[in-house]
Image (cartoon, rainbow, N blue to C red; front, side, top):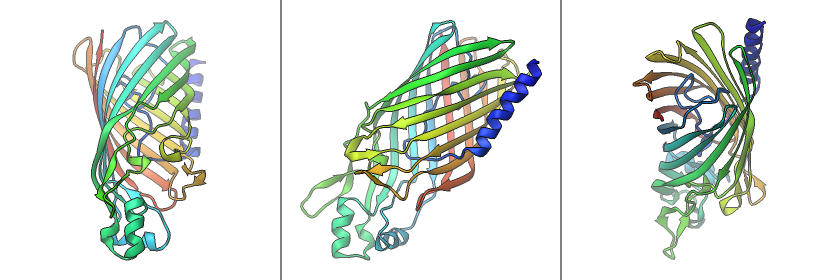
Length: 335
């Protein structure tokens, strides 16, 4: 019976990953794994001790040339891009009871090499010189404090190493939304950066879903989740598209093993964004990643972990930059 239940759960999440597409966007999906049986996946197991952690993530994107950006503008397409995104996460896990815990996540972000053919500077410049690549608005870096995530997990089922939990959370707009472009307009004014490249969003986001933890065999563990995110309108009348994220992680070894290899599939589906109540054509899309990783138990209370994610399939909306790869690594301490 247990084997049948395990196989059914795994089959279900694999079907979800296969049938529900996913997307990539500048602020990224919330990072939640702490390097136990997974790196990016939430499980349903409720910890018994308080933990704190720090995690670094980096994402790289393909780039359009300046000539392509000019041509997009001539075609009436508002396109922006950046080459690199770096995020530092501080986290805390707080067990409230034997079947309920809270996870707190604060992030700081840095975006590099931002280009925009449709902000205030570019619009003013292109009006006078429609084919001049110098009219592309360029900003070297945009960095600052990001939004604050509070997520709760309630385990409502636990039997024979199979656990199920409900997930619910809220993202509070604590982050900066006032960063400006490097290029000044003729009157000396510098326009605000596009919301995609602000560290914060200015919006409240709600998250809800479910998670599973169990074992395929004595040594092969499995964790999986499905997470829905609903976004409200934020800074500059911009609203990020709602999204669905699914993850599944297979790990080999026991919880007390020195090193635990992890293999994950991570998938996101995101609707198109809205700005001034208009749908942004060049937004939204679908991405499926494969993410090999590891967790190393340094001491009884300390562990380090990491993963490399490669997008094995992406179908982005309109004119958008493909993600090249992402990398994450972190440290976790249990009191």
